[in-house]
Length: 196
Image (cartoon, rainbow, N blue to C red; front, side, top):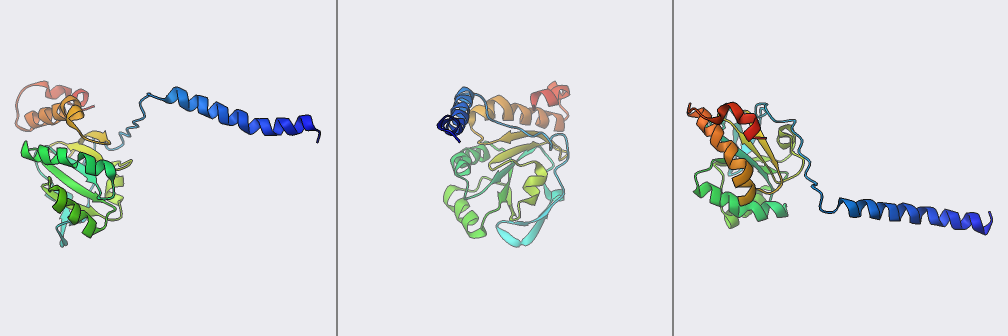
């Protein structure tokens, strides 16, 4: 192999690397949220999981609220969960019903997390294996699902819940579902559009 071919072999990885850097540079500032809608418009999957506060008691999907509510997937090991947690405490003060799903966590760590940061949930179940969260359509904690009064998932929020996405996406969806459950006339015909 002559020196010309040797130089070419050394240039190929450099060219690939530079191409990759250019491609990543042009992706900066572009939305990266990927929402898998596999769970939308389906009932909450059947489950039987231990109650986090008393693991000798099992909770099933039949015991979920019969009015619209949120399901929040969280873990004490999840930095974004810790960051969004005070907002869920605030939502509880506003009367929003949320069921917590403690995802792949140690029970001691999960209970300490709730004791330290406050417990914003109607109840929390322990999903040690993570199977229930995957059945819901989880791509990574934290994620939140808006569920209607019939137990059908209407909205899937990937990542942190905060005041911005609460006002722009989540609360309008929850309100129209509450109106529908109460039999009020209004934009209930547009639920799919409002909850997208």
